[in-house]
Image: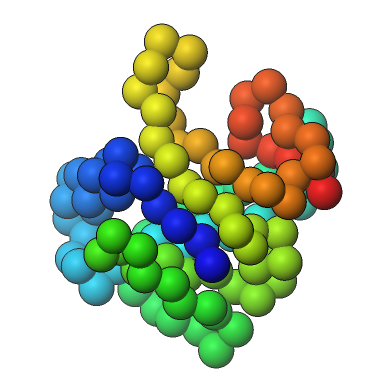
Amino acid sequence: MVQITDKAKDQVIQLRDQEGKSGDYKVRVSVKGGGCSGLMYDLSFDAEVKDTDEIFEDSGIKILVDKKSMLYLLGTTLDFSDGLNGKGFQFINPNASRTCGCGESFSV
């Protein structure tokens, strides 16, 4: 399961509204190869649910994760920080053995 904090939920709703996406759009969370630690997180809005997707709902936000990415994301919490040390979405991933300084890539 992938969870979302209240701060991240509020930011997702704000971005979805800014981009003119309806409530039918879900948050797609995936993992791709790359970055300084080997794997990178990817976030996007998607209205299409694929056969290979797992669907989670937390705090009223529907989250799509493909089965391959699920191996890396199980138990992850999506958060949002707007503090002095940086602004943006953050992944609290218990499966990551190492993360880079930017927080956008990791390894297991």
